[in-house]
Length: 388
Image 1 (cartoon, helix red, strand yellow):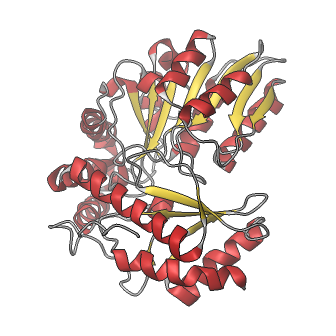
Image 2 (cartoon, rainbow, N blue to C red; image 1 turned 135 degrees about the vertical axis):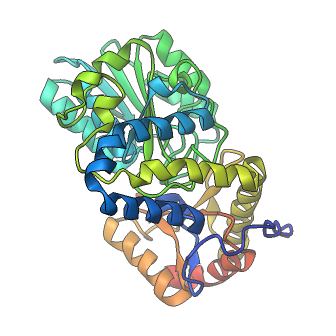
């Protein structure tokens, strides 16, 4: 019997502008910006249009100030972070800056985010390197088993490993601290896709980018920042080697300025990001994390008990959970999207479905705006949608 769900957190009503007719159980994909943060960003945009010259003249210094506040929230020094738009951009910057040669190998996993793996393939094609993809079972029981599988794939030419901290499709841990340490001992450069970490997990980047050479995390998912906002943390001697994807007037200022400045870009999401962290602190970051993790676990249990779906291994403390769909269901991009569309149209629910051979993966998220009855409705109706 499913345990009682967590109660809604006090002080969270009215914080978001989501459509109340839809159950938004997919916070992990795009997030949603709290209304207080939206208001800060709106004021910044109005300020920009009142005096564009003055705004862009001051923008580099204001971005640096915002970055310093973000760095404090993430336990990092401001000069070791750069603001970027998202993890995909951050990883593209890193791969473009790495000195790879013919015969070198980039290690990824089949749980990695699709466009990140494609970026690794492009870098390999341009440099003469190759990509080795570690095939991980969806049902591999724990981080230790994952660690052993990744290390077994490391060879004498493995130069770089691009690994998720928390995977997007399956909501599980890959880049554990022990795995990162083991790869460092083997001389492998580590690039961590930490898209889901800021705000959802306690983060302390410390001296060495969270134990990696490069660590990139989105702030627009769980840290209440506007889209598109992310951070690129770079360890040690790598910082002078980092180059942006385009040349700018700030290029000669070095890292992080050369990465952050891109002319007439919209900097208001980055300048608003500290307000998102402040709101999270006001609500109680640990309180929010505990609530969301319990609610996601509750939703997963309902999908198991009511819909008969198979659970996938979960890292404790995550606000995302995944279940396996039956064989033949959502095994292609087309059918996975069709199931997401059907869940919205027939159940009024937004979910994430990822294609996988042998049965796709359904992922749910939990945020303070979600309610237990939303997961109850999904669990009661998903079986019919799968049958269709």
